[in-house]
Image (cartoon, rainbow, N blue to C red; front, side, top):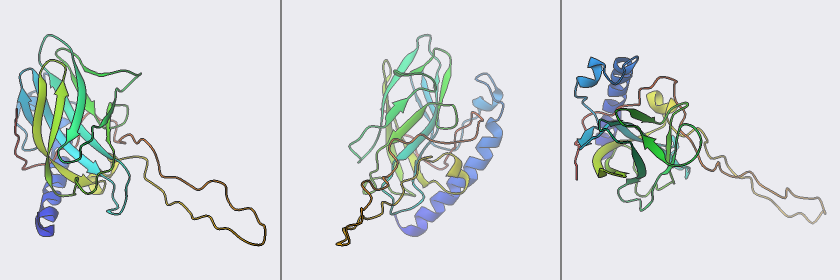
Length: 220
């Protein structure tokens, strides 16, 4: 994708995010707001519905820090399902999943929903893969559930800037100062600053997740 097309994609994503966030405020699972088909990365397979899926990278193109995946997952079935993995096509890696509270698997309750990304919500952190995850692209993201299996769609990859800055990785990597050896006998630092490790997405406290637009959903 050319740089001009990427810029257009990012602009469209930001506009859709601002509109969807306002529409989703205060919307419960039974709200009429959820009956409107969103113009963003959304799809459904069986009892599972995915909405507002977006991959958010570090704001610095030279950064090797982690990216995060944000989404809202609905389970319309009568049985709870666990989200076993999330992968982004081409990276060869799975996101590290954490529930909103406690430890263990990320569970989507029967007749309920889970927001991934944001303060006090579940998180999905993807190790850095700058060669495969590129800002402005619409890349295939696959969610694997315990009963439904794989659910795939294409979602925009956006940097943690502007509207997405609150949803991106909260632990930005810091530069590591070089240690030098001196003939004067002065001690040099024994440890240098290291890049941030596992990151969790930071976001406003509302339950809406950022929503990119104009993506084409594909399902298995």
